Length: 65
Image 1 (tube, one colour):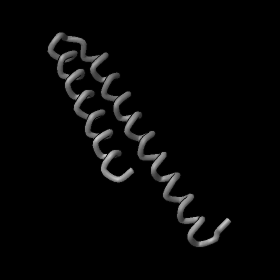
Image 2 (cartoon, one colour):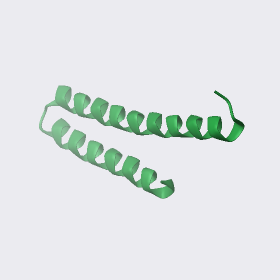
Image 3 (cartoon, one colour):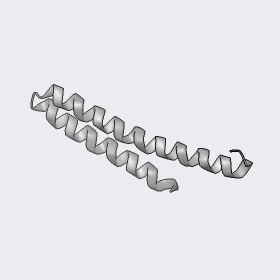
């Protein structure tokens, strides 16, 4: 899981940046903003999943309920 998640986040960022730039060049700023927000939400979902796994691991290690 280590380096794989970094590559996923980078790929989402690159694809989002490319699509957003193309849309801005074709005068579709509203859709470009929407694409950027969707990319941000995807990355946040990945990070939230990682945090959930971290807290589950901490509960297991320390025996908390």
